[in-house]
Length: 383
Image (cartoon, rainbow, N blue to C red; front, side, top):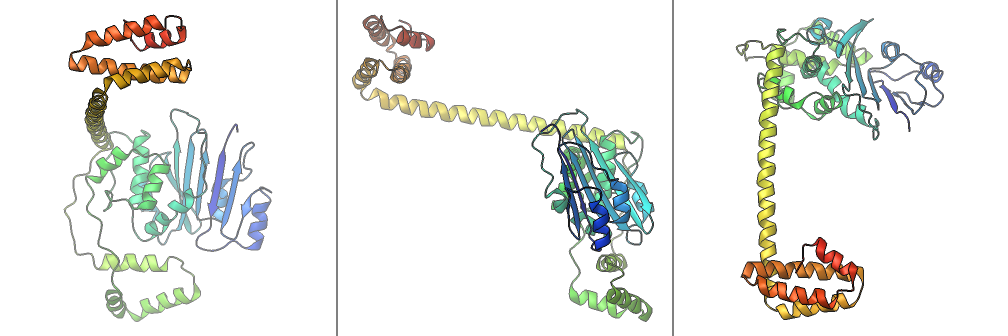
């Protein structure tokens, strides 16, 4: 396979109509198209469609993957649940950009493998499904995805070192599965995320209880309730629940933390470098501890083996003679290993001379067996 390109588009807020599916079919006869998805894989040739146009017209999420290192993620949300001005504070480079189309804002996250290394075992199926929940979180006011997008720009050196970071959302140190999938897909440096998380407050408490929500709803004005009911009945706002929960949280926000001094992109990059060096040093120390532990365990096992061999050395020498007498290469190997054990036993117990004498006798008796002698020499068993 010379190349691999994977395209997937997903419709979340509304299904595709039959006419829309027919229009999409004209772009590729090999594409898998349903009322909510458009998936195609290319091993040669290129996709005739424009992903930006498809996102503007039909879809709410798009993932692209190519084996030469290109990765792309697009998400579309209504502007009334995600303010374009908020997005602009985080999406500041080629790796993270955004544009508006009608009532929507579309976020475009992009990564190129700087080394240009081809990846041959890629499979895009299932990746977008693992990522798509971040869209609902973003609609509900969770800005961690946008901050990760800004970090992607920092990592790609698209942000000046003296550029201050945007507001750090809470919970950056405890990414959920979908945000982790985004970070891994875009290859965002875990040490850079860890450096940024140091300035992030703990995540907010969980979902409000039903009783808390009922109390809040009772206090809403009749006009608000009418608007909510109208949106619910007509289905005109697929993000109604996320929008209301965000409104509830804003209304019940009691914490007023003192904002920390904004760090610069350069400071975050330097901290990530220090964290990486510390982690690599700790990993090296752990590997060394593991190596010492393995060597000690092997040495202990070796001594136990030699103790067993010392119980009846004459039987061991007889076994050597039996193995050599077979004139079979595999048995020669077993005989040599047993001789190595006897040599080590003699060195341990201070009986080296006796072993050397027995080895010399064996070599003399089997002097016309070059295959055996070669094995003895390779094992350092010279008389």
